[in-house]
Length: 562
Image (cartoon, rainbow, N blue to C red):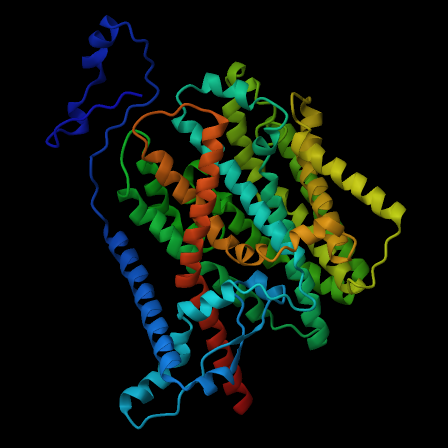
């Protein structure tokens, strides 16, 4: 990579690479021009960036006010009153709330009203400001108290799946700043590294978990409500749960991040233009239907799929609740349709078997990269080829609900058979493409069925852990440290690529590839990601969740009094 600094009076039209050709030839340096770009040394913050910073600052101010008011009440209130009042715990994220992770925490009572107008105003604002209190939200975020009926093993699965996602994103995007890709292939072309090359299955773990939690909690709620579900709130709550934090991070990515770095590897201006033109695709959760080259914040294709599956879920939930046979038949029909789509698309476009397939062909096959990108656009991002794990999660949630978890008994033969099939199929999904180049029909079957097989493998793990047959593995996945880390998963997913982008794109020279360096990057990114995730959760996610609950309770109390 050749970088040349020019006076700020110059513009890209003044720069001609041909002026440097004779010098390169004299010192006998081989060169190949892959791309040529000229970038200014400094960029100005756009109007959108100013608005984004203003919004972030407003939230920080509310956190400061809410925390200060709560702390003031805490230290000015008699100790006896503080110790005698409890406040119902509020979950930090929807999944945790759905896992029934709410608990009773010591909180702060309102002091007796003062005749002063200031005290009256503070008392009126207290419920709102307390939503932004970093002390209250932090205590709930870090709370690890387990309650009866909690699905503890899901916390460990969620955190480890997020760790797997981060590991993959440390390796693959950083290939852009590696000095010699010819030296990379021999180091990654081995069996253990397939866990990274095929680490895209980590996202299917989230689809299984999402479908399971949504299904299991829906049926529990149906049992309480006798089948009556407020469907409008069903959708509105989900949208409000995910969208505000998502849009804040997206705004930061599109307007502030572009001015936070520079250099030969710094992000292409096309990335910024995509967000300026297509951000509303993300707002509507349909960005997975765009080509990868046109997507804004491409990582969020998963959120689009998950929201689309959620929107479709009542079709399966209602039929399973009222007519189980019809529900199972409907899910089977959609599952077969997904298989058929995967097979036909792979066969028609001659796609790779899996995301990267046999990586040895990257050096010898000039069409390999193009086929990989085509696979991502036509198979990887699309809901009709990714819905299978979500459907499996829904079915698992229904089975667990009907069996009431504790009533499930498995004999030793069933356990051993289930574990054998689960481990074998899971390992095949991750390692099965190593040094294998299946023909077109084989690749079509692989792309059609592999995510279903992986979903079934993970579902067995969840099933045995929740039914009390998980043993040591269940104890590990239910370790209390995973509980707060699991609550930060959504924020971690949104920001980890931004942090990695900041590091790699600000490099001034290419890097030598070795696993020691990449592992250190992974561990550093993992810790920094969760540190920033906690900050984002306490500043945006937790306050907005509590604020939504506060508003909902206000409306419910008014409707009861009318």
